[in-house]
Length: 570
Ligand code: AMP
Image: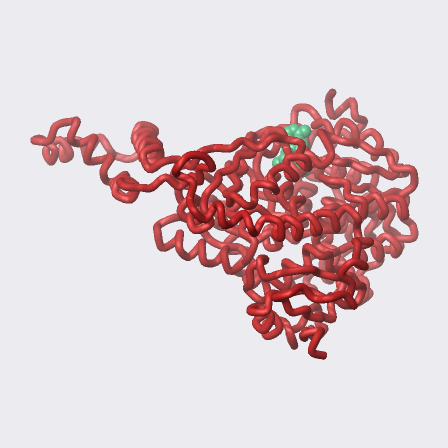
């Protein structure tokens, strides 16, 4: 099919041709003819990288009225990065259409400037939910005339706790003629929202729902917990051309690992919740320019990041919430490229792999952690390739030749080659000379002792994990009763009360991540959690409870004072 056949305005077709789009992608082919009517609700289940921005961007530009300068279309998306990316794509699509303005409004930037942009008169507003609500409350934006609402990456928005905000936005667009919802997965909460606010939506699925991208090779590496960092280094060293994102569960890990790797000469920086917007922009800018080869991030900080050409995603640890795996791995293998998602797994986490396989409908491949010899060989070839591929056609290398010949007159060609290799290569050769095998072998004599003793931990860890996974499926109705606010506390744990709950936009997973990030504690300290609208009770290991309270009690969350105390001592 061609873009002409989809019925788009000639000016839009011209723009797509200039962008090098030859044929519409699958989602574009299915969505555009439906969306051009402007009156039909639509659900598009598609991963990022499938061309969905154009799937809604092109029809929006086709149907809005360029002569009327008030907001007619609203695109809501989870993050500032995605917001800016959508705007820049729409700008390219509208190149040949005069009089259409598109504005991005997102948190972390001057609201004054955004209000000024809005006042100039725009037809398309691209917004993150929080900032949009802020603008509505300040009466700086009028949604009265909005005809089209696009919810992009709806599942991510829900994951981030924006459900109430989205409902508020849908309730405050009275003239909405159609709602277009795009999502990579279809959790029950999104079904609920669509049932409530959409009218017989036309539903299109590209690829399998809930499935990870087919072009991703999902690999896992089993090692002992104390070798995680060393394994990470080996995976990086074994892939000299890597352009990747490493995910950690906590910001402390992200920061520590970034610092350690930087000291050891790697091009890496960390992205986590503690950075100011300016610091975050700097890191992202360097990563996009490829000044940084590696980015290490927590899930929260990395939400919505969209960088093209990522070759590898590395899970330093598997995420607690298995759905997060899809979001992490989806950063690679996009737009027809292939990618590799590597997970460093401890023996006691392997049970999670099965659950993830089911979710992504793809198989994991167990791969051995490369040996020191493997790494040195790989690096050696990389150095040779680099020498052979170096461009000497520009510059005055010819003029240096006599000088070089003189200097190396008594050195053989072989020796020169060896010396050149050594310049680049010595670091690896020395480092990996006596490198140990990092693989955790579960057969034979190599089986480390702690593997056996760890097994005692499995049932508790697994029970906790499954409870959490199950909660997601059951939505907010999770089986609270069994360990409700009045229930007993597990031995060894303190039960803490917090005045935050689902009304604050939290889900269990996002809440746990929040308290761990605030307290710099590891998820292993957490026990049962019971979340209500306004409050939550969470079990924290006795030894860690004090730190948790100290880090949260009295702090602010969205302008409200957090109260946390031991529920049993109240
Ligand atoms: P998205 O899923 O919107 O993030 O798009 C992923 C990438 O695919 C973007 O870089 C788009 O510019 C590109 N793209 C979108 N539609 C097409 C198309 N029809 N042909 C080629 N590339 C496309």
